[in-house]
Structures are given as C-alpha cells and as structure tokens.
Image 1 (cartoon, one colour):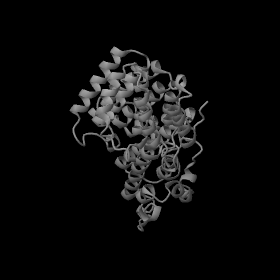
Image 2 (cartoon, one colour):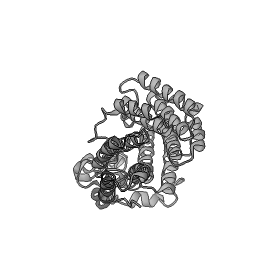
Image 3 (cartoon, one colour):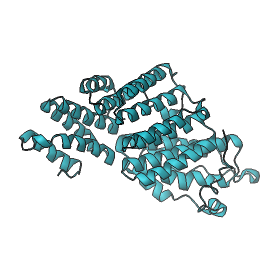
Length: 365
C-alpha cells in the first residue's frame, strides 16, 4: 500500500497552518452545544475538556493517550446519536466539529508513530460520520467531500478495515442515489488487493453493499450471489473480530438490508420474509434503520395488494421516524406516499397522509 505523506493536517487541509494548530483552542461551546449535554458530552472527560497537558517540560505538548481515548468515546457517541436521531441531529452534526476542532489540531504536537496511526484512524471515522450525516440530510456534494477526507485518513492510518469500510460507504452513497454502476466500480476497489487484510465483518458489509447496488440495477441474480456471500462472511465473523464501529452489522441488520434489496427487485414475498428476521433490531438503538425498514415493508405490502396492512405498517414507521431528523428516511416514506396515489380520497389513506405531512414535516402533494 502506498502511504501518503505524513498526515500532519497541512498537506490535505492548507487552511490549517502549523501555527493555527498550536495556538487555536477547540471551540468547546459549539461542540458541547451540539452534544446537548448527553452522551457526547459525557464521552469527553472533565466536563467536555480534553485532559490537561502534563506538567513535565519535555512532554508538555505530547499527545496523551487520554486524549485519544476521549476522541474514541466521542466518535462512538456520535455514531449512537446518528443512529437514534438522524444525520440532521446535533449529535450527528458534531462529527465535523470533533474532526476539525479537536482531532486535527493534535497533529501539530509530537506523536509517537503508533499513536499517530490511531489518530489518523479516528480522523477517518469522524470524516466518514460527517459524510454520512451530510448524505442523510441530502447534502450530497458535502458528503462526497467528507468521504474523500475519510479515505485519505484511512489510508494514512494504514487500516484495511477503515479503507474497506469507507470505500463501501462511498459505494452505498452511489447506489442509493441512482448510480449503481459507479457503486459497483467502487466495490471492486473495496475488495481489491490493497484491502485483503480487512476483517471478515468489513468484507461482509462490502458484499452487502454490492447486493444493494445490484438490486438497484435490477440484477436479481447478482444481488442474490452477493447477498449470500455477505451472509456467509457474517456467519464466519468472530465476536469482537472487527472494529467496534462495525458491531452494528449483525444478522438482523443484514436481514433489514435484504428486505430492501428484495423490495427493489419487486419480490414482496421475500421482502416480508427477510423483514421477519430483522425484527430483533431495537428501535431505541437503531431508530432510523427500523423506521426506514418499516417504510420499505409498507411499500411491499402495498405492491402485494394489501392496503390495510400497508397503512398499519406505515403508521408504525411514522411513529418511529417522527423522532428522527433524516431527509433520507423521509424519502423512504415518500416512496410509500407515491404508491398510495391511486387510493387517495379513502379516509384511511388521507389520515395517513395527514400524519406524514404534519408529524414528519414533509410536503405531500
């Protein structure tokens, strides 16, 4: 793997000079406001402050292990907030502040090589989270910029799991927004020789994204092969055998994606069968994902001709997604709304559309 120049934040981000790294204090007011006093604030020690510098003159500016640990905890809190409250939430939006105002300035201070690689990996995850939040709120150009930064830092960290995961996330972005051919090209990069040391769980996620891209391209055979490969890889993954940020990829989560894959392929029966396997996902932890899956399932019921069940599941989706700030999730509900067009005028349908309009703050034509 070709390693980029030492990532001191100056080559990739010319607006951050060395002097600004050393002199600029993190904007704690912005970050703690975004944290809303919850899990993110708790993740940062000493009431939202990174640990003080050691008193010894030789170590005065050295990056301490506690500072790296605090960033790890804060990134985990951002991931949890994004999953529960959506990319538009203050918790998810904190990723960019953490990256630019807390993580990057540390490159202006002495770093042992091992800690430097760890900090690069944290920067990759924070940039990926910032990109996902942008994607989730419909800011696609910003999402691509953040994902490019994430890939830069993952390569600088020489972390096969991070490289594979970022490339797969970039491919998922393309697949979700009508560029499945581009997504499949990116998948080939994610599965290339540079990432052959990636964990089984990271490869399972990549194959799952590949299946979603094939489904968006209406290639059922290739989608089935990729999905079966993802399932085999996940079966083989050891507990704790991958990074913590891939712990979300469980069999219920794979089943949730499989339900959407079969919805995209027009196979309502398979969609509903996979949905049954995904119901173990906890809505209080995976709020957005569960709400979106219910919108997918409601659409499948509608396509199967069961209007009553479609509306019942659609109402459950709104119950959950009214807590989530996610344009992407609202788009899933709007797909159901579009399918209900021939049934407008029925009281039950109009009641559902009214809920979408008012509780999701979503215009319904």
